[in-house]
Amino acid sequence: MKPLYVRLGALGIAETYVRDLVLPQWWEDEAAENPVTYSQALMIVARHLGLDFRALRDPDAPLVPVIPASCRYKKAAGAPIASLEVATAISWRVASLLSSAMSQHPLEPVGQALDVRSSILASGAPWVGLEQLLDYCWSVGVPVVPITKWPAKGGRPSALAARLSGRPVIIICNKKSSAWLLFEIAHELGHIALGHLQDGGAVLDEKFDGQESDAEETAANEYAETLLTGRPHPCYASARWMKAGRLAQEAAVIGRRDRVDPGHVILNYCSSSGPDFYRLANAALKKLAQVPPTSLMRERMMQELDWDEIPE
Image (cartoon, rainbow, N blue to C red):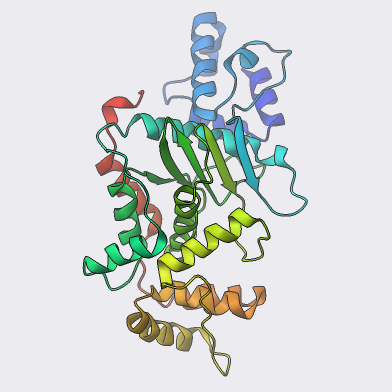
């Protein structure tokens, strides 16, 4: 197994990651002395990490992450695409599993931003929050799930939207607060609703900083803002700078008035003020009572997927 760990390590996939998260609990490296068992281990590694099985079997072949033929990277300037390929392969593998486990969910068209917002608010929700947006996504057959454990090295995206056999999928790839993930999911839903995804393709967003110049990213941002606030270019501001506690209080008042998630009010306020204000945003978000987003997404995943369709 040591040569295999070395080859995976060259991709940024550490031996501990493979042992703890990829290989089954019963695995012992001595089992690799049996060619049949070793082939089984290679198959598990290939399936879990989205790597080419034939390349894994050939010790002299370069390891090839299996990524969609049409994958557009919305990344930071200067960031090499190669650094994101392993994360893309893992996300694509998860997306393919999700697509196969959604047979009981009929697929419906994703609505335009104002229509989605109106339908959510008409249900009695105070605003479009994370729980309400997850409800909507699953109701139209779009699964939203988190990946929280990644190889220690290499780049990782913030989120990915994919389409497999006609089924859109949203993968969230970080552990940010509910307010951050609310916008990221709304943004990825925008890519889906606006037709930015080819079947068998994906859009990978490395980060969201409001500085995107790409036309599709701008359109997805406007979709997200319209869905969350009712306006494509909202701008919350104040005559004087506020500390975190006051900002959280004011956001709660404005949120009730405008039917906008208070966490998003905070993010919009700080984003409009400049990148130096993100520390203030995170401090103010901690003052709000927000649900743990990863737990919420996982609970919905457990309820909604057809687990009989997922390989052991």
